Image (cartoon, rainbow, N blue to C red):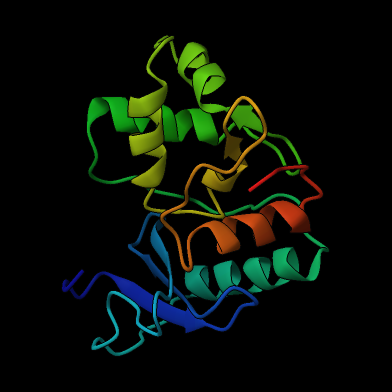
Length: 166
């Protein structure tokens, strides 16, 4: 994230400050502050038109007026398996939920729920690629690696009207 072709913006949100990065082709990362810190806190902001659009769309999502993002996303890094999981997440719509097991079956890896959980947790663009919509088959939140963790996931699920248990 230190190249001159990477842009960065920080915005306030109901779940904490967000830090979003992009290159010339798409959104590359989204982080939610954890314990008051963001991963690239020491870097100066360099917002691009794409990041301003992302900030506006995220604001609409948090206000309850947007149910789908219209943003280019460029998923970098990750293993082939993680990339498959992340692409599988992109098919989930606002208010939809899927279990880890069903997501595994959908990408051709039935019985790999634990590995699916690890890949979901490594999603570099949460919220826009809605990993919060993945729950245990019982509807229970089993973890979340974004922001404050389970309370952040519960808040996002509540925003979308998704029933869940903690």
